[in-house]
Image (cartoon, rainbow, N blue to C red; front, side, top):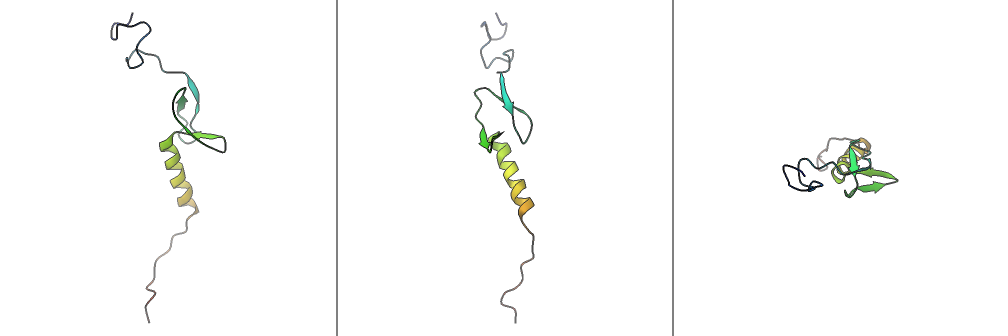
Length: 75
């Protein structure tokens, strides 16, 4: 019996509880995605939701061209 949560096996919120089993790795951060954890998938690549947002921003920024706006009404 656990000395903290007084359960056997430990309650999932107990600091002594083991990590859930890993399912796969996030393509962006390379950290595990655990069984029961929500993920996003694109073309077979799996991402944490926040990681996919970061990856999308990087992809769009790499594709964009930067310019300086000019006065369209200048004579």
